[in-house]
Image (tube, rainbow, N blue to C red; front, side, top):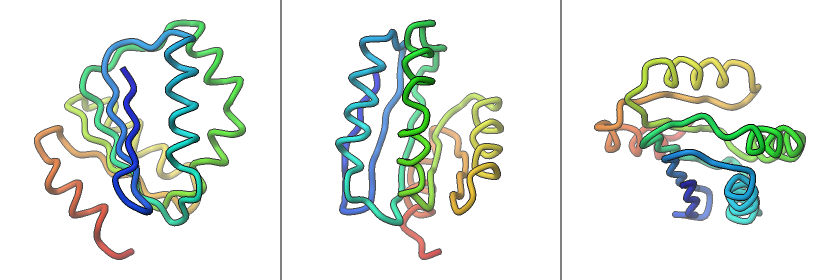
Length: 123
Protein backbone atom coordinates (compact mmCIF):
# COMPACT_ATOMS: atom_id res chain seq x y z
CA UNK A 1 0.00 0.00 0.00
CA UNK A 2 1.15 3.49 -0.85
CA UNK A 3 -1.13 6.13 0.64
CA UNK A 4 -0.63 9.81 -0.20
CA UNK A 5 -2.49 12.56 1.62
CA UNK A 6 -2.11 16.31 1.40
CA UNK A 7 -2.35 17.49 5.00
CA UNK A 8 -1.70 21.20 4.52
CA UNK A 9 -0.96 23.81 1.86
CA UNK A 10 2.67 22.73 1.63
CA UNK A 11 2.68 19.29 3.27
CA UNK A 12 2.16 15.77 2.02
CA UNK A 13 2.14 12.62 4.15
CA UNK A 14 2.96 9.26 2.59
CA UNK A 15 2.52 5.83 4.11
CA UNK A 16 4.25 2.83 2.57
CA UNK A 17 3.57 -0.76 3.54
CA UNK A 18 3.73 -4.01 1.67
CA UNK A 19 4.94 -4.64 -1.86
CA UNK A 20 4.08 -2.56 -4.92
CA UNK A 21 3.59 -4.17 -8.32
CA UNK A 22 3.41 -2.22 -11.60
CA UNK A 23 -0.30 -1.43 -11.26
CA UNK A 24 -0.10 -0.26 -7.65
CA UNK A 25 3.08 1.70 -8.43
CA UNK A 26 1.26 3.57 -11.22
CA UNK A 27 -1.63 4.42 -8.90
CA UNK A 28 0.82 5.53 -6.18
CA UNK A 29 2.90 7.76 -8.47
CA UNK A 30 -0.23 9.28 -10.03
CA UNK A 31 -1.53 10.09 -6.52
CA UNK A 32 1.81 11.60 -5.56
CA UNK A 33 1.81 13.87 -8.62
CA UNK A 34 -1.82 14.88 -8.02
CA UNK A 35 -1.39 15.60 -4.30
CA UNK A 36 1.78 17.66 -4.76
CA UNK A 37 0.49 19.96 -7.49
CA UNK A 38 1.14 23.60 -6.66
CA UNK A 39 3.34 22.93 -3.65
CA UNK A 40 6.39 25.13 -3.20
CA UNK A 41 8.89 24.85 -0.36
CA UNK A 42 7.00 21.77 0.73
CA UNK A 43 7.40 19.37 3.58
CA UNK A 44 6.86 15.62 3.36
CA UNK A 45 6.41 12.96 6.03
CA UNK A 46 7.26 9.51 4.70
CA UNK A 47 6.14 6.71 7.03
CA UNK A 48 7.69 3.37 6.07
CA UNK A 49 5.50 0.92 7.96
CA UNK A 50 6.57 -2.36 6.38
CA UNK A 51 9.06 -2.14 3.51
CA UNK A 52 9.25 -4.65 0.69
CA UNK A 53 11.10 -4.11 -2.56
CA UNK A 54 8.69 -3.38 -5.42
CA UNK A 55 8.16 -6.01 -8.08
CA UNK A 56 10.32 -5.79 -11.22
CA UNK A 57 7.36 -4.26 -13.04
CA UNK A 58 6.98 -1.67 -10.27
CA UNK A 59 10.68 -0.80 -10.42
CA UNK A 60 10.55 -0.50 -14.23
CA UNK A 61 7.56 1.83 -14.01
CA UNK A 62 9.28 3.95 -11.37
CA UNK A 63 12.41 4.29 -13.52
CA UNK A 64 10.31 5.21 -16.57
CA UNK A 65 8.89 8.14 -14.60
CA UNK A 66 12.17 9.13 -12.95
CA UNK A 67 12.50 12.55 -14.68
CA UNK A 68 9.05 13.67 -13.51
CA UNK A 69 9.69 12.31 -9.99
CA UNK A 70 12.99 14.20 -9.77
CA UNK A 71 11.22 17.36 -10.87
CA UNK A 72 8.53 16.77 -8.24
CA UNK A 73 11.16 16.56 -5.50
CA UNK A 74 12.33 20.12 -6.28
CA UNK A 75 9.03 21.31 -4.76
CA UNK A 76 10.16 20.17 -1.31
CA UNK A 77 12.65 21.56 1.22
CA UNK A 78 12.34 18.90 3.90
CA UNK A 79 11.41 15.25 4.11
CA UNK A 80 11.10 13.35 7.38
CA UNK A 81 11.32 9.57 7.07
CA UNK A 82 9.84 7.41 9.82
CA UNK A 83 11.24 3.88 9.81
CA UNK A 84 12.65 1.29 12.17
CA UNK A 85 15.09 -0.01 9.55
CA UNK A 86 18.56 1.47 10.05
CA UNK A 87 19.54 0.91 6.44
CA UNK A 88 16.49 2.85 5.20
CA UNK A 89 17.40 5.69 7.56
CA UNK A 90 20.96 5.75 6.16
CA UNK A 91 19.85 5.61 2.52
CA UNK A 92 17.25 8.34 3.12
CA UNK A 93 19.74 10.74 4.66
CA UNK A 94 22.24 9.98 1.87
CA UNK A 95 19.58 10.94 -0.69
CA UNK A 96 19.24 14.26 1.13
CA UNK A 97 22.89 14.96 0.42
CA UNK A 98 22.42 14.12 -3.27
CA UNK A 99 19.49 16.48 -3.93
CA UNK A 100 20.52 20.15 -3.66
CA UNK A 101 18.12 22.17 -1.51
CA UNK A 102 16.44 19.10 -0.02
CA UNK A 103 17.04 18.11 3.59
CA UNK A 104 16.06 14.58 4.57
CA UNK A 105 16.13 13.44 8.17
CA UNK A 106 15.32 9.94 9.38
CA UNK A 107 13.48 9.17 12.60
CA UNK A 108 12.47 5.96 14.36
CA UNK A 109 8.78 5.16 13.82
CA UNK A 110 7.97 6.06 17.44
CA UNK A 111 9.34 9.60 16.90
CA UNK A 112 6.39 10.95 14.93
CA UNK A 113 6.00 13.98 17.22
CA UNK A 114 9.67 14.88 16.76
CA UNK A 115 9.42 14.44 12.99
CA UNK A 116 6.35 16.68 12.84
CA UNK A 117 8.14 19.36 14.90
CA UNK A 118 11.20 19.21 12.64
CA UNK A 119 9.02 19.56 9.53
CA UNK A 120 7.14 22.51 11.03
CA UNK A 121 10.27 24.39 12.13
CA UNK A 122 11.46 27.35 10.06
CA UNK A 123 14.45 26.70 7.89
